[in-house]
Length: 192
Image (tube, rainbow, N blue to C red; front, side):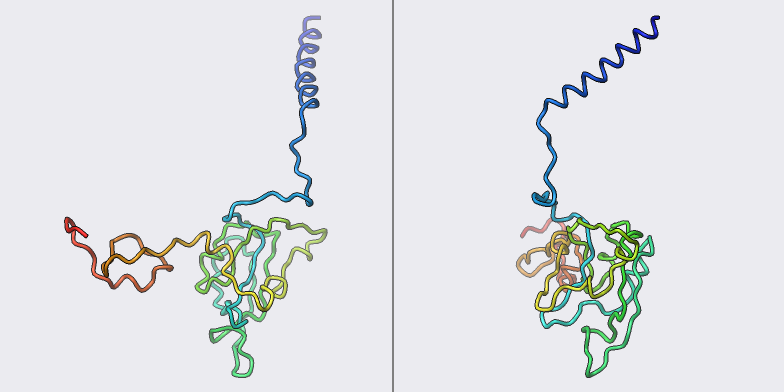
């Protein structure tokens, strides 16, 4: 009999939580009418970027494919010709496929890319009914012609150090600060 009373008390406690939450206003966002604002560094759907002149940034170097821990990227490079200059390099990606079901959205591909051709943008509305619909091809990944952006790279890349009267201040450099490493470094103890 004691067990029955203990069970009824536990049931009453559980139902009290349920009834208390039923009286509160819901916090659900009405998606897709009201979309949540994501931070600039949110990793979502892949985008292949172009240069201002319309050429593709991807030079078919296969670094993103090689660095992808999930093996979600497949690239077939092809040579550029004089009459068909697709990218700025010697090669371009003839086939560029991303399997969104295999991708773990780690960002290794965008870090490995020497031309900032691929970025993970904050479009997180990725859904499909078939596996084939989540295999994204180059035509779907490319920015539309006439648009040339760096995408979310601007949120991730560090800003280059500001010049300080012709001397390098000794701070860490990045690919964004290339070309400033040959400046003389300041001697310890020396003032500005």
